[in-house]
Length: 282
Image (tube, rainbow, N blue to C red; front, side, top):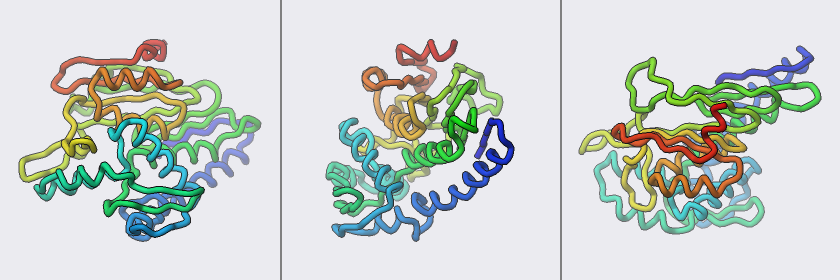
């Protein structure tokens, strides 16, 4: 994690830096899919039971459900299970049918899981965590600026802003070409792409991102970058847009306030941007 804090009081900044560091393991205990005792893992093992959840997990589950509907299934909080199906060389059709079911329901912060698939919130929880940490670090009285960067996903709050270079996702070089440079100010930023973490299958490597509607690995985009009002929205949209084609992606983004995107088509087929992206470049 990269953390930048600017302010007038060293004591205040030290306190906020310490508070952020203490919050990280607490949030990991909520969202980790690798820890069987995390709150998410325990809820994911339930089936039809009414479970009271924390406000953090409940908030992200509701947001993921909202976008599952808004995207008409292009985003799904259980889509991560498709990677396991492909690794095992199994037929995806049964899993795709399960993904058509509402994954969970709720009343307030009591949730009931409806399908026997693991919930994986990696495409949205990291953004939520980044927003939470930035919120801990910022107040407009003492802190002039805060930036949290986890794995290239960013939340900035305050004055000034930061410059972000977007690298060519199709380049295998460590010094890949910069294809765009934007200013991120009081906003979130996230990227998603096919270059990293391929899923190894009996038929060879495929993308780690899958279309929940078809069960197939995505192949249209090499990478997508998103600027949005929050890191959580940018995180989720970066994954969702990877599933859509160019016309669908542009149409979705143009309907959203404060959201812009850049997509690099696979096989060096060109770059697509939303109408406001050029303004971010200054």
